[in-house]
Amino acid sequence: MERTINYGAIDELASAIGVSSLKVETDFLIYGYHVESQIDYAKLKRYRQNFHELSVDFSAICHFSVNGELVPNVTNRIVYVPPKELVEISLNNAFRRRPAGYSIFFTDDFIDRSYYKSLFKTELAAVARVNRVPETEIKAYQNVVENIFHEYRNYDPFTSPLVITKYLEILLIKLIQLQTLADADQGVKLTASQTITKRFLSLASEAFQQGTTIREYAEQLHVSPGHLTDVVRAETGKTPSQIINEFRLQHIKYLLTKPDKAIKEISAAFQFAEPNNFSSYFRKHTGMTPTQFRELNS
Image (cartoon, rainbow, N blue to C red; front, side):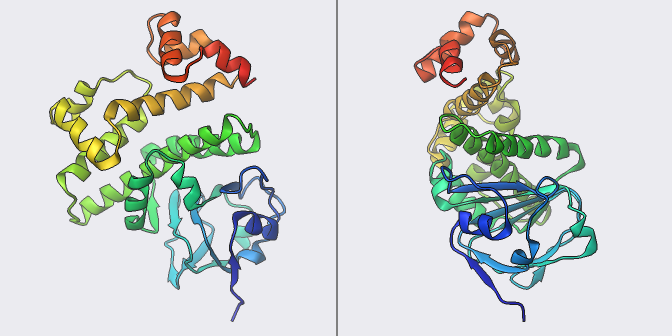
């Protein structure tokens, strides 16, 4: 039988398989199957790791199993592997042609940096190993993962940890949403509060740029604004307004690090009628103007 390799830390795995990792970011790693040309897949034939793994596979040519259970080989899948589970990969000829996709590894410490750590620690345990991305959402998932990869490869110690965390939050919330839909198809019952919160997080993760009000979210969820606020606060520890602002501010900060994006253009994208209103909003929540933030992170 193939020897099992135990990876205690993310940088240990990165070193073993020959991908570059960041010494300043030991709680997170992402690599692209189709980007890295020197991955030693033999070191991934049979292994356990002390951290979380997300395999985002758009090509369905990677055959593997978790704890002896064969993972369905379908296109556009997200496979979640909790810590300490046994992973075995079959290195067939197709896989050697470098499939399209990414592997993401992150620790509990990385989750602890998230505002939604209580939600993730509760819900990730219930996430099935395989979730297939609907055809209509494939591009959205690809964009999120590619943004994470781009940020990791162009790492800035001041802004990248927060940017990566927020994009990973979006990805994990979308993963939980897929599980919710799968549970509904299989007749799994969630509490009313869990259902409302999950639906709100899903809506907010997609519409945070549009200036949607709490009342409009509540109308979409067929509840009152007060009830939505109470339920979301009870489930996540945050109000809906705080969650929306976190989504908005993190994406704004990400765009401000891109020199080709004019501040006026970013302001319009987030539905601000005047750049001055945008500047006041950003200064209220960050303590600095968009221009000051850009200069500090250029």
